[in-house]
Length: 208
Image 1 (cartoon, rainbow, N blue to C red):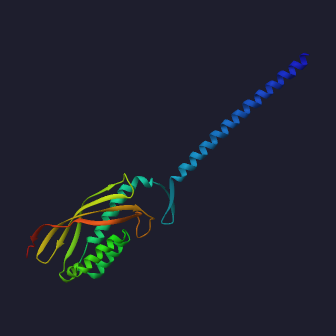
Image 2 (spheres, rainbow, N blue to C red):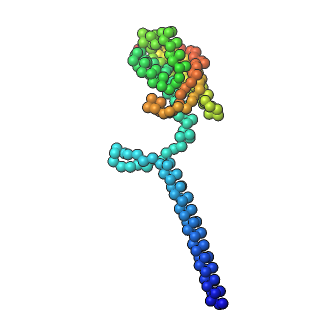
Image 3 (cartoon, rainbow, N blue to C red):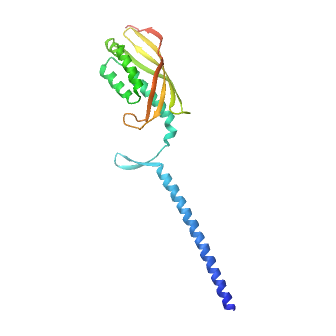
């Protein structure tokens, strides 16, 4: 009888040992699995790039959403600089306008046609006018999509005898689109409209 009890105790002890060992292995396996998932997630936050084809550099990838407001402002600023910067050079104007078209929809082409019909570009070329743009501020409302924006700036118009400062206020919408070489920020300006574009002051140029 004692031998039977002794066998039972040893059997229970063996079962307990196996149970503890199994739980330990399950816990260790779970820990390794969780750590592996974290390692994979961290690796997705990194980009490996070649430095002149020689060495590997590790660059942390920033969360794209964190940069969207800054990218949106730069997109709008860049578009306006392209569209409103003019020199008395037909090829220069056409190249700028062509680049601007990649950043916006048909509403910009409508304004372009209006300028052409009113001989704005011909006057710039014929009268040796230089037009540059100074950006004051760009406001974008990211609380609703598509994003409403307002651009505030000034045009500096240099003629042979005068320099004119002209206000420029526009508004429109931004929508997300695919990033391309011609549109690196992945935004498209829609329903664009000039709301204010009047002369502020005109000064005579100094003659030497």
